[in-house]
Image (cartoon, rainbow, N blue to C red; front, side, top):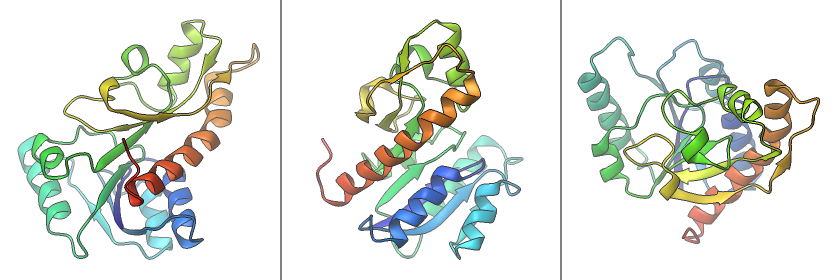
Length: 198
């Protein structure tokens, strides 16, 4: 399986997926990173591993941006089998979702996508909102990407609930949560490669 990964940030989850593929923990090869941020650490990580990078010009109109992304993904050689989003912040346009039906997945650091998902709810903002809401437990979700951000109808699998400690800040909670999220992401990619997704 050939995987394209979208990342606009530090790329730590992206790198874990690369390592899993190179250590034969995944029956897949990472063939492309696409990003809206040419200065992202994810881009530097991709270049370190010799993975092709496509930088999308965020200054283009939405239509031009979407057309470019569609062209990059649809015409990539080798053909892309799966798209994984790891901190990719733009909404994936409908024609890409249609072209890659149930072949685009994303991770989100919450078990409740209705309350703690949606536009603007990403990264540190999610555990911050979860702590503010007074929740006792949290976790992460891997889900199919649809026309809306963090669609609760697309849930594939979730991590076991993680107890939120009285001493937790948003930063410490996210740091404790991410290793489980990354392990689950790799598990779900393997499920896709083995045709075991629901």
